[in-house]
Length: 254
Image 1 (cartoon, rainbow, N blue to C red):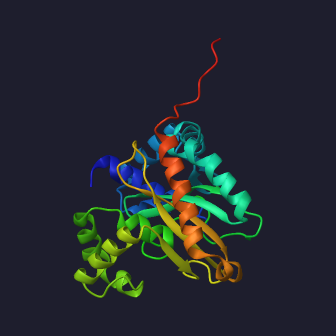
Image 2 (image 1 turned 120 degrees about the vertical axis):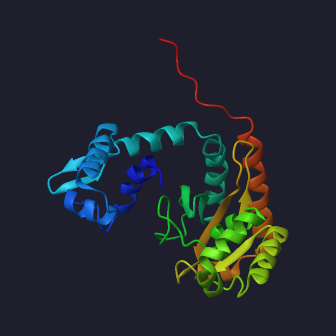
Image 3 (image 1 turned 180 degrees about the vertical axis):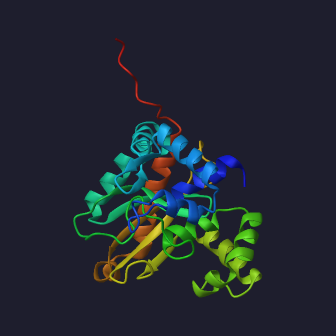
C-alpha cells in the first residue's frame, strides 16, 4: 500500500457508530507509527478531510464541499434528476441511482416517493455487495476478470446471496442478469420493502450504474412487473441520452 493510500485509509474508520476517534485509537487501528500517524492527521486536517474535535478527530467539511461539486457538475447526476423526479412523482416509489467504487456500492442520488417510508439504504449508505437489485445489476455489468477476483475474495458471501456455489454458477448468474437487463428484489435489504433495478450507462463512465425503484412489499405485489421494467428501462435510456448532452453549469460573467 502506498503512503497516499495509507493516509487516506484513515478516513475509512469513521462511521455513524464511530464519528469521533482519538489520536491514540487511530494510531492503534491503522497500525501507524506515532510520527507517521501524526503527520497524516495533520495533512488530512490541513486539507479539510479531517478536523479536530474535542476528543480527537472527526470528518472534515472538505468532504461536503466535494459532494457539492459532484452534484453540480457530474453529467450523469445532472441528467438523472428530472427523469427520476418524474418517475418518483408518477409511481409514488423511491427512485435511486447507485454506483460502485472499489468494492463498495452506494446510492449517489435519491428521489423520494409519496408511498414509501425511510429506506434502510438511502443515499450515501454503502449497500451489501451481493444483495439487493442495484448491487446485482452493477456487479453483473463488470468484466469477467473482475467477476473472477470477486469470486476468489467473496465466495462464501456469493453463495449465501444465492448467486452461485461455484465460480461457474456465479459467472452464469452474472451473464443471465446481463441478458435479463433487470433484477427484482423482495425483502433483501429491508424486510418491508421490494423493488427492481436496471442498468444505467453513461458515455463519461466506464462501469454501469443502476437505477433502483423501491416501494412497500404489499404495493410491489400488485405492480405489473413487465410494465414496471419497461418503464424503468425507458427512463434509463433517457438518462443515458441526456448525460451525453448536458454540460457543467455556466458561471455568470462578473
